[in-house]
Image 1 (cartoon, rainbow, N blue to C red):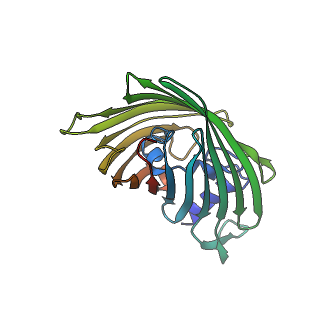
Image 2 (image 1 turned 120 degrees about the vertical axis):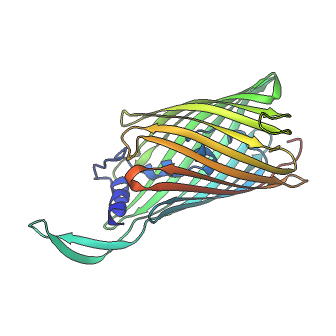
Length: 316
């Protein structure tokens, strides 16, 4: 347990030279993604064009005792703008503070140590071009973070920006999506925030008659590459397969898998996977739960869980 808290503090403390990626501020924001994204290799594969109003709660649990919890909502504001907000908190396990004598031997314990982080984000998506089979939107997100560490507190803010584009392929049942994002860029704890430039592409296909069972199914695959401010390269590939009609009444089961390369981290090659269940009622109300697991080598496992309640008006 003590080793885990040390690892958390190495990520959060600005003066540390952690074995993990990055020495900038706000690196823990990288873990705050939905279970849908985590299960497909970290790809923004299913979410770029989510419609209607949505309330979503997410949790990320890192064994053996740290937890991120987030609660957010988003909705359309007119035909071209979509806005949302999210609040989140990170809490590490509380363990005894151990001391070391001058000769290197164990010096007993004194009090306890833990780390906490609170923050919030405002997100926006603005449709900038839509014609025929094409649509393009700008993406933006502004985050604020407060960190409470064993011996010091820090406050910082950062912003991300990018774009997403979609082209329908032959019909509304197939779509090719490309995205690019840069950030978070900002300042905190006396240094610039850790950042990256990401770009990826994904393909989604809805099928009236599926490949596995009779009836409606669908699939999606994608890939992404990241250039980090630390001059490292990350990337992932992944896919999703679903049984049912996500845009119609009734149940839909999702199965996700992927793999991500993250040089400089505790586990550089991370196989990932997850499942999800969506239930839509007539009238456009839907409830969805998604789960994903990500191995982190000696640090244990990350467990992602996301619960979403959404309302989509038919024809939106």
